[in-house]
Length: 83
Image 1 (cartoon, rainbow, N blue to C red):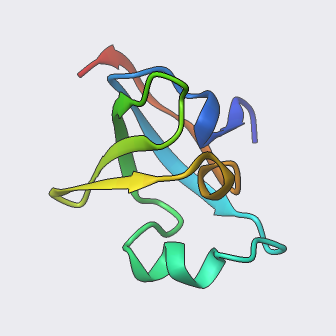
Image 2: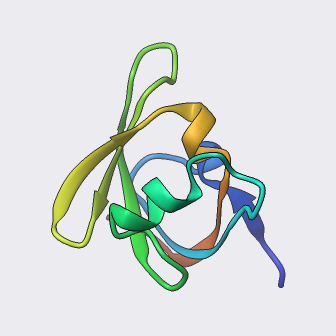
C-alpha cells in the first residue's frame, strides 16, 4: 500500500490510520492491548523537545509512547487536513 510510514515520522495534528504493527516488535502485544490495532485512527498531539516520547489521541484518550515503540507502528495518512 502507498504512503505507509512509521508513526514516529508523522507530523503533529495529522490524522493517520494504523495499517500494521511490526510482527517482530517486542512490544506488539502491549501496543495492541492499549487499543492500537489495524484500522485504528490516531492523531499525534504532542512531542517532547527531543522527540521522545510522543503523545497520541487514540479512541478517546491520550497515550504517550516512546520512539522505540512508535517505530513499530506503520500508518498511512487518513486525512490531509490538520486537526
